[in-house]
Amino acid sequence: MDYPRVFGRFIFRFGLVFRTSAYIQWGHSSRSLGSVLMLNPGSAQFAQTDPNLDTQLKKYGAAMGQIKADPTLDQLIRFVERIYMGHPIGTLQIYNLFHLQETRAEDAINHFEQLVNENKIMLTESLVTKDELQRHPWMLIGWGIHSQTSWHNLHEAKKLWQQQIADSGILAFGKHNGKGDYYHPCPQIQSKRDTMLNTLETIFETEVKPLIPFEELIQHRYTVMKWNGKNGLDAQYIIRDNTNRTQSLIAKGLNPVWFHLNLDSDPAVSQWLSKQNRSIDELQQIFS
Image (tube, rainbow, N blue to C red; front, side, top):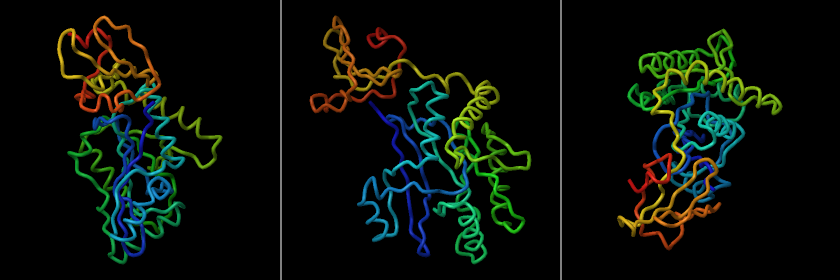
């Protein structure tokens, strides 16, 4: 079975860790499933996943690779799998108002304010272009409802992002607090996380999904993983059933047998052609 993987890019500056990019990937497609804008990177680390990356960051000041999901990323995974009916194929891009990695929101904001005031970092460091935002079908905003009048730089960063989002035309949503801020998608109290998930799903289904072109949301029943490169009676394929993540060898005259295994990773088919961008609803379509 394929499980989503989380990747991040990190740099080390001023004795601090900054996560400059992150995304969650289902399968191997680069197709965007959506995007999220939150406050700052929290506790997701890569040291437990790949200690070599931790060594690389400390030695060279930069590292990129797979990281271990924290509760927030787990919540985002649950959300995406709900709205795509259990079998998303593609990536969820994660953006932040600022890149400084720190777990406690108040500490992170105060540190961010200090770094900007000392001209060590710029307000626009995390801001992406309108063209990049337009690659995504939607954006979930969940930067939290922390607010203090002294947080001038944070307020300005929010304004810059809001203007960029408006100019790009991307469909943006979240649970609004009525004061210009959006609740974090993963409440600290674990018992409230399912309620938040239900709320976000309802907002998406009623306010966002009806405005997204059908072809951007459709998830086909099957995905073609590998092809032996032959045609006619000699053609063979490794197919994944997206409803349960099982895989089977498909050929004319052969009844499929589905396995909870990654058949496409078997050395016996290592020379077969990858066809992961092709999805179908009926198995017979593979031969047409």
